[in-house]
Length: 472
Image 1 (tube, rainbow, N blue to C red):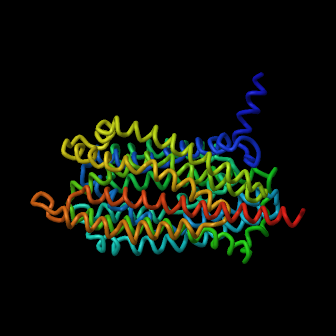
Image 2: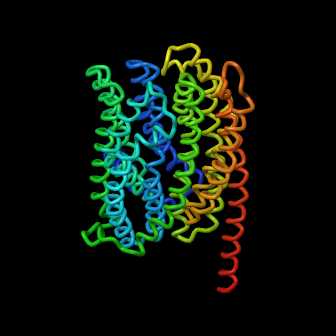
């Protein structure tokens, strides 16, 4: 009995073939570890925020939030590599292409090494000019600069964890990625308290703790991949850049990187608007975005799970199973998002109190969370279907939808609402403008994504019908 249980547990840490079984159950099996992992990933930033807010002050809280848009902007390249790698890995795994799988993984490792060096240099050099461009208040400028400099000097751990865990997820092994992230999160929490509360290192201590913890998670992912010889055997020759493989990774990943870049640029420009509204609104934005990050986790998790599910089934030629999985994946996303969003609405005040005991800041944060709550369900739908389209190789459609909704729509709306809501208390506009514009952009993105998905499925099924007719 004990041995049987041990074998079942060990199987959780292996690659998972999702081309068989009930679609919604398979999607849920992929999603739950991903959701827990995303929550743990969010804890990195959340614990940083709690520690600096409690042990340093509200200005330090604003500093960590002010650095986040720049980090997201300069890390979009790796989002693209990770997405392209995950799609190719899932498709090769679904097709049982052992040699092709090893070649994709080897090229991902090499491409990531090159991109890491470039991003390290750009990040360190660009941090201060970008902070000035964003009109970062003098009270938090140096703290923001310290945080960014330390993070980019130690960026390798963050990058390799995200790329290698993306490969593991493409293989269906979300549990190993989750375990390694939980280990590094625990280390991050301990180091945060040690460096900030113990040594008084402030914002710099938070950044250093994160860099160390992420490096450990990257080492663990590397160890796991080199033990998966049942599915592929990585040779030195696989590390040499292969033109077709690199084109595949970049071709599939670049639109996803651009999509993330659009979100980051949009956030960067909105952060500039946020900064102009005052330090209390900056601090409120940090608190809301940290809590909001947890509310969005089910949608993000379903999106990545759908990419793996669609990629494997697309590689295996399971066309009808793709359509069934997309429909059932939307239902899973709606249920998960509704449950987590309800919890945030019920306990919003208590959650905000974790970050600060300033009553005015807590009240403002709860009000903003109530505005955002309207958009979480539609966001889940768009993420699930975007993940589906990426899995079958269409990464451009989600990119264009992101550009339309985040740049063409959200940015002008945020500034327009701010201009229309100016008053004596908020001469540059009210904070509600930041979040109302976001909800509207999410809603329109969901409508466009559903329309694109329906067109894609019709085309897919028409192609299958033509092949079957030719065979008959």
